[in-house]
Amino acid sequence: MGAWGTDSFENDDALDFVVRLEHEGKAAIHAAFEDVTRLGAEGYLEAPEASCAVAAAELVAAARDGDVSRLPEPAQAWLAGHADGLAIPALLVLAHRAVERVLAQSELRDLWEEGDADAQSEAWSSGVRQLIARLGAAASGSKAKVPKRRKTGKAIFEPGVLLRVDLDDDWHTYARMLARRPKFAFYDCRVSAPAEDVLSIVNRPVLFVLAVNDRASSGHWRKIGQVPLDVAPVPIPDEFMQDIATGACQIVDEAFHVKSAKPEECVGLERVAVWDPTHVEERLRDHYAGRPNAHLAYMKVKLPPGA
Image 1 (tube, rainbow, N blue to C red):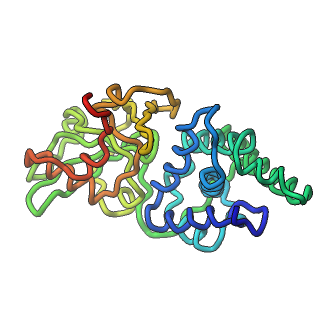
Image 2 (cartoon, rainbow, N blue to C red):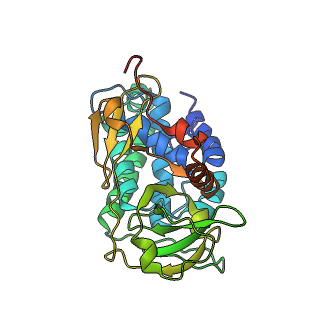
Image 3 (cartoon, rainbow, N blue to C red):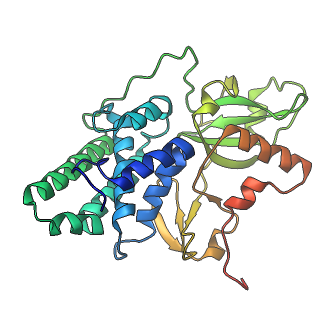
């Protein structure tokens, strides 16, 4: 299985995951968990997918408790600038479930158990159990240490914050950070002059709700005010995941509970993904120009022929 040690990153598949992480960012982490979730409890989880899920869970655990000792240097370097949004309860629960699945039933577990060295098999399973314990403690909030933020000199935004989203030299609109980071609501409020009344902004219709990466709250979009979420609350809508090979879909709710669904049931839902602010701006410009958006088209659910 291309392994030279029992640690989570001492195999070829985990290192391939680190390469994807550097190129795709948090989308690689979500994809690793999605590969496990789509199989359910009965599907056969092969070693590459299991190894990637364990590696992704190591990053989520490190983002929550600050212990990066189990991460290779490239993963540590990536995490130093992208920890925000990884330690959210929903992702911790998803990581916990994925690693439990690997330990309970997977090709990776079978390969270790079939090996000649009992000590190595026990070392691997012990490491996975420790990871499960870290994720479980973090998800429940017990004995969890929030990692220190790097001193960037930039404001740390909180739920309810309103951000100005510039679309071009003349027009802009507004986004609002929701309770479950990194979710943002984007308002139908395209204006050329600053909108001084923040309450009038949050009472406008919401175009869509998306997860956006850390650049959104680290200076790319400027803070213009804050309205508590109990004033003009914004519900977080369901999203969907789809297996690119089989077309099978799952609907994911606000608490990241997952249920199987037909592709037709996912029409109109956002795909589980983390957007870059520049791609969100492109989507907003296309919306107001009345033209299709390439990113949105790529993300839409793929329907079976004839549907």
